[in-house]
Length: 532
Image (tube, rainbow, N blue to C red):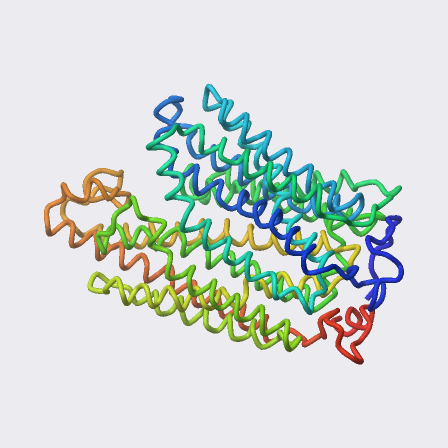
């Protein structure tokens, strides 16, 4: 496969074992020390929204801006999604260590300023600064690991990132609640500072990467077009069906702007020397297929994380305070399987079977969750969540591994950022589409119920758990059935969409993973040609 030309020096020594596409061998001690810094940085990126979400009622009460509350999250999400591919390219051109340290510094600056905010306007602006840094955290973690560890050995370390994800999902709301109750909401931002300082210290002192000197210029025009396209897509999924109707001029205008920007982006990328995302990468079958799979994994995961707590609180009567713990079964399944698969891939070098199994199990888990009803026990729903989590465990790290194994080392940042971006966009679409399906189904189920109010009053589709106690028993029972019907629709469609991921997984080819010291292993350039 022909890669776009680059003036950047390859980010590895010429004599690296295994050929020019191999990372320089590192000692296990050096890798473990660097991993401490990478894990902390990843924890920062994943914990932030979850901690802040718990503190939002208190923040809004003190800063008096409830009408702008959604923008506290949206500003962060927009900045993260838009900056992700740019951080990946900057790291490839000018050095991964420098770009990663810069992203951490920007994230910490945004955190400190957010904690000092005196108004909702300031908080929204500073959250955008945080998001700009966060876009580089996830990309930096994955691309640096790709530069340190050969794909064949990467599974040994990627399981810990699944553990971080599980820890963040479960611990984030609990930590946020504790900080808000016992300290101040401002500490939900300040807590990032000591953690970030530790991550910076480990990366500065321990991480050694060859210096990169490049005369190439970043494709700023392409970056602007991509940013506008991604921003418009995220706004569509954020506002559609909530702030504005799906057929409104605002949403249709954003759709037209997104389409025009992305078409323009593709046109520009074919005519510059250093494209932000080299379109030639998509000629590689494995890269394209894992991008599709990553999109659907984000689609399913964020959909589940968004709607399962609603079901468990309203139908099963679980406490909202412990909402983070409600997702533990899913995270447990994802963590265990991710660890097992990582070790198996490192030992055997084989990986194709795992995406096939994972997508099928994910579809099965979604199908099981579509059967949730008002009589379903917590144990049964927990078992179903374990199945869905197990399916994701087969996929979460494998998709990144295959994407990185499909490109040369000089494009590691682009591969990492693309995989992260597709998962992020998939999550945005999942929440938007599932949210629309869920609300419509609940509303349809409740229309014939006396006392139903579509405008948000008693018996509406937007009832909070606190107001449930005030409902008469017949209306409460009907509302719980409506929620169950909404869950049925969401996860049934989730199962159908997961079948697309199954098809994509079947098209993957078993290309030998680079590295691992296996006799007779193909050279890196042979891997790339075989994958096309």
